[in-house]
Amino acid sequence: MNFREILDRMRPEQYVKPASSPRVIVAAVIITAGRVLACERSSPPEAAGRWEFPGGKVEPGETEQQALARECAEELGVRVEVGGRIGPDVPLAHGRAVLRVYVADLLGGDVPEALEHRSLRWLTVDQLDTVPWLPADVPIVAELPPLLSS
Ligand SMILES: Nc1nc2c([nH]c(=O)n2[C@H]2C[C@H](O)[C@@H](COP(=O)(O)OP(=O)(O)OP(=O)(O)O)O2)c(=O)[nH]1
Image (cartoon, rainbow, N blue to C red; front, side, top):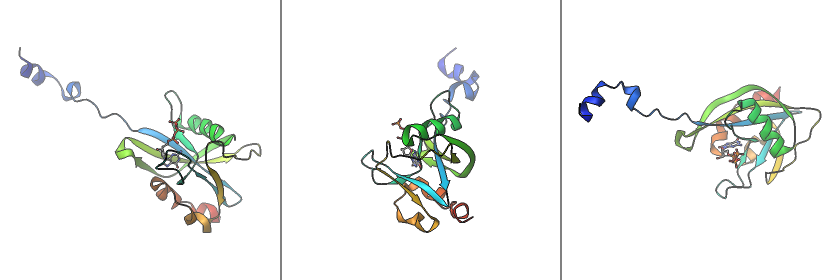
């Protein structure tokens, strides 16, 4: 049997390499007293000075909620309870990653500190447009006004 005949006998799933699923980046919308926590990136250079929500990559073996709690501890030194999703899945890096955002509540009166960011700000609904968000965050920010006004 030649190579062509072998290929002809195989089902597509046996020879078409499946597209790897996108890497999930989780991030947290933390709201306190009508203000949302925004974080200024310090790196890499092309993202420094842009603003985002705290979070990062989900590591193998972690749930998205566990990853978000870990990232909030590492980046802000706080404990959080992760709640529901907000906004759409936003494609990143030409579809190789996806940004997925959750609402999170601070636990035990913990106060966020900029352990990895250049600075933090608590923004009111009227201040949402006063910082340069990372592009992927724009559709998430668009969902915030009802949450900040209520
Ligand atoms: N954390 C976070 N990352 C975002 C947001 N919006 C957005 O485009 N990103 C991008 C920036 C980065 O390319 C990527 C997250 O990478 P990261 O460097 O923060 O993740 P990480 O903490 O797991 O990093 P590392 O351990 O690999 O250094 O997602 C956002 O709101 N929060």
